[in-house]
Amino acid sequence: MNTESIDGEGKSTPYPQRLTGACLHCSLRALCIPDHLPIDLIEQLAAFVHNIGPLHKGETLIRAGEPFRAVYAIRSGLLKSSVFGESNAEHVAEFLLPGELIGLDAIAAARHITQVTVLDTAVVCRVPYEQLLTLSRRVPGLERRLLRILSAEISHEEWFMALEGAENRVASFLIGFGAKMEVRGYSAVEFTLKMTRRDIASHLRIAPETLSRVLKVFQERGLISIKGKKIHLLDRFELETRCSHPAGG
Image (tube, rainbow, N blue to C red; front, side):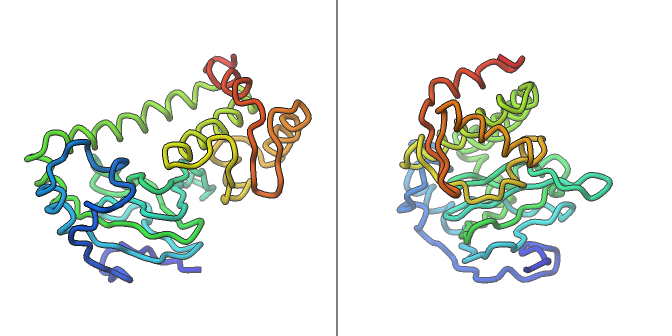
């Protein structure tokens, strides 16, 4: 397992490849580039985007505390962002899928707050922040896009923290992950969870044993079926009902 970060200070970035024009043809463009951005500006953006990868399971893309120099857009794979407490206990803040941006939470402090680790073989696009900032000043839609993404992340975290009860949090996670898959052209009710249950439990702020118990209860009630890491949401409506009321609904 690689214990050094890929974008650490003084470290070279492995597998760099300039992607001139690639943003224009990327299948995930709609997820990370504003609608109606002129082609010439997309090409300008692509001119300073670099492809990094493949990155393998266990590699660290960003280490907490590192100077903030770039944001990343995930092209493929699965990553997680984590924060560590005083006892070095890990809390998984987020699971990151293709099309999502990494690093915006570091803008204010100019240092990365979270550590980002690869969970499943990934390829990411590295975008130097200073150049992105310069371009965003010329393109109001791009700046609004970045601010909207950051605002949505904060709002979701506040809403999720208000959810009471393990069952509500597990239901919210399953529905939310399915929704993310649907946006990417996959099924919202049948998907594979490639992260470990320990990481999922950490993200939900519950014990791994509690997560296993809740999943078993959901199966017994006919809400879901599980085969290994594959999940099938059998009663999406009931699961949505459970996570629609932050006060424990």
